[in-house]
Every structure is written in structure tokens, then in C-alpha cells.
Amino acid sequence: MQAIDTLATPDDAAAKAKANTLLSPRFYTTDYAELDRLDVSAIRAEWDTMMAEYEGDNNHDHFQRTPEFAQEVAERFSQVSPELRKEFLDFLITSVTSEFSGCVLYNDIQKNVSNPDIKALMRFMARDESRHAGFINQSLKDFGLGLDLGGLKRTKAYTYFKPKYIYYATYLSEKIGYARYITIFRQLERHPDKRFHPIFRWFERWCNDEFRHGESFALLMRAHPELLRGRNVLWIRFFLLAVYATMYVRDHTRPMLHQAMGLESTDYDYRVFAICNEISKQVFPVSLDIDHPAFRAGMDRLYRLQLRIDAAKAAGGVMGKLRQGALYAAAGATFARLYLLPVRRHALPAQVRMAPAW
Ligand SMILES: [Fe+2]
Ligand SMILES: [Fe+2]
Image (cartoon, rainbow, N blue to C red):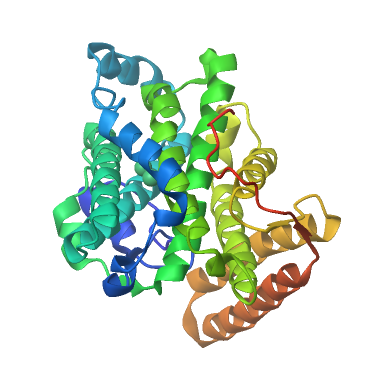
């Protein structure tokens, strides 16, 4: 987790966004020439329907603040406890970083390919992510914590991922992003008294963008079925677990945020995993058995190890370093045991695309 405990100044916010830890959102580069060779002809009809939706841009007017926005922040958010305030700001910073990470990646791909299908898709997705990042950043600016996104693009370290890792990881992060936003939106729709910040009102139409971004990667992968067979299934299992485990550990460090919405972190996370498991059957031939008692125990152990890693980091010194090493090894072993648990297998549907029905 972050060593930065306070979020008092724009520098704190910038440092948090820039940090690269196991749990923080990263920026990616990839092999653009390989992306340029993607061929969508096997799924052309579904592709064209999707591109027409991007073209139609039904969210073009959505990411604008209403006059009531500031008033609601003043009336409701000013009432929250300092702990909740900190967790919420932390949530905004990780969210803006991850939205902007998508924007940077899609934009870089768009600039570096000439394949018209891929170029057009990446341009549309970069458009959406830039709106999302900008909208969250406005809320950070309300607290004087706005990020310099251009500066972040220039100074944050980039991680290289092979294209196929980009497909698996980005597909999942889009779909899990949808599941996270819609679960929060539905909860606050039922309990409007718990909507402590107006940004949550925007989540419903917002998450439809994320859903569609996920659909795009589903189509790309289904157009290249070798990505979904043989040894690649082992990679799919790895990314499913990595994405779920990261979310679980990160969410459990922000218990107040969920409590304030009338949710509990474990319950919220398993609802999100269940949605994501259901959706990912459109493309992945396996899903994780999230109800297996050993799965639940392992996820919990990862979180408890993370707390001890944070304590060892805070303690510092040689002993702290040694402890950290031992704890990372224990976390690695726990992850490996989770990875080896049996998975559910399913045949892929003939029609790839799904509706965001949650
Ligand atoms: Fe987004
Ligand atoms: Fe997205």
C-alpha cells in the first residue's frame, strides 16, 4: 500500500498517483506493430454494430457538472468524518489514475497503428477515458488536490506488457470497472440517504462506457481464438486472479468508504466478482470458483499479509526489510495456492456481445 498517509496537498496527491506499487494503477506500453496486425473480419458484423455505438456517442453530454453539484458537495460531503474523507479522496486518486492510464494507453496505440479498425476503436476509447479522468479530477480540484495529468503522463513509469497481456488485463479491468460502478450505483439508488458525494449519480451512464470498452476487447480476443486456448488459458487464470486479488486487498484498506454506502467490503467485492465472472464467460473459457472456501480464505490471507507488510514497511530498518521479504514470500505462496484451485470451465457462446443488464 501507499506510504503516504495524508492527502493534504496537491503534491501528496501527485505522489500517490505517480507511485508504482503492486496495488496501484500503472501506465502501460506495448508492441504496437502486433496490435496493427489484428484482424476483426471473423466478427465483423458485431464489430460494426459496436463502432456505430461509439460513433453515436450517447454519453457526449454526460460528463458535465450540474449547478447542484457544488451545493451537494458543500451540504453532504462537508458532513463526513475525516477518515471517510481520506478514504474517499484516496478512491478518487486511484480512480483518476486508472481512468487516465486507459486514456494514455489507448491514445498511444491510436497514434502508433495504421490499421483503420484498431485506430478508430482506440480513438473512441481514449475519448471516453479522457472524459472520465477529467470528471474525477474536477472533484479532486474541489479539495485543491487536482492532478496535473499531463505531468503524470510524462513522469510516471511505464510498464511494458505484451499485447496478449494487455487484452486479458484491460478486458478485465474494463468489465470489473463496470461491475464496481454499477454495484455502487444500484446500492445508492436504493439508499439515497447514503449518497455522501454527488459523483456517484454519474456512475450509471459512465459504467456503460466501461462495459462497451470491455466488449471491444472481448471481440478482439474472439476474433483471434488462439488467445483463448491451450497455454493461454493459464495466463487467463493468472490475470483473473491478479485482478480480483488486487481489488480485494485494495478495497479492504478502505472499509469506511463501503460502510458509508451501507456496504461491507467483502460482500461488495464478491458481488462484483460474481458479475464479472458472469460477463467474462463471453470470452474466457474458465472462471474462478469464488465460492470455494479455500478461495475465500486465501483472499483474506492476502489482505492480512498486506497489513503486516505495511506494518513492516512502517517499522523500517533491517529487521523491517527482512520481515517484508518473508511476508512477500508468504503472499506469493498464498497466491500460488489460489492459482492452483480448480476453476469452472464453460463453452464460449456463439454471439459474443452482451447487454449491461445489472
Ligand atoms: Fe473509464
Ligand atoms: Fe474504460
